[in-house]
Each structure stands twice: as C-alpha cells, then as structure tokens.
Image (cartoon, rainbow, N blue to C red; front, side):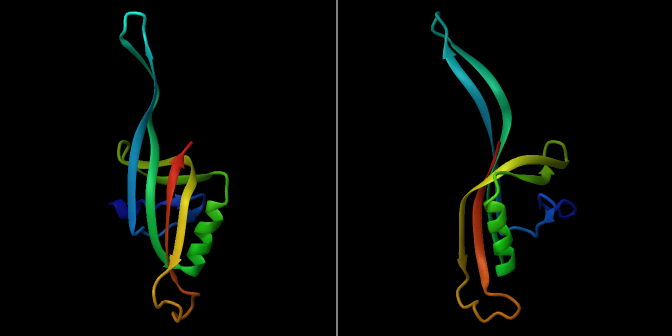
Length: 122
C-alpha cells in the first residue's frame, strides 16, 4: 500500500499532501553532425521535478519554510519503477504560503495555511 511509504524531508516524516505531481525529464545534448543528422548524448533519464501543496498548521508551515531556506534536502519517497523508497537530493523553489480564510481562531495553532512549492532534483 502506498500509505506504507510516507514522504520524508531529511528525517522529518510528512503527512499526506493535498496535491503531489511528479514529472521526469531527460537531460541531453543535441549536436548536428557534418552529414546533417542529429547526434544525441543523453546525460540522465530521470531528473525529478515535483509540484506539491500541503494544508497545514502554522507549525508545519514554519517547518516547510525551514526546508525552503536550505541549500538542499534529502527527499525520501516511493519510486514507481523500483516499487520501493528512493532518496533524492533536491531543492525547494517557488515557495508560496498563505493563511486559510477564517482560521485565525483555530485552537492550538496560529492559523491554518496552504503551502505550495516545487522540488527540483540536482
């Protein structure tokens, strides 16, 4: 079951995201030969990019902001190809956060937040 594979940022176990979309890109160089054909050199096949969104308490929003300020984080997540965990070195970009409407009176937190960001693999 996928619920047996929660996402980790460094050693922090995350809760289920509101949205999580993965895309993989191929890193390649294309050169034209003297004969006019393309010569393609593939450097890498599975560079991961993720768009994520979380609905969370102010404490978790602060935790995500701490990860945002790091140069890189270790993201441990389920890999579809291997059907097991895979750890990738990634960075957070395009971080956005905002309070949920009428959440300022929620007990035990300084409001509820929607936090979204992109993860880019090195």
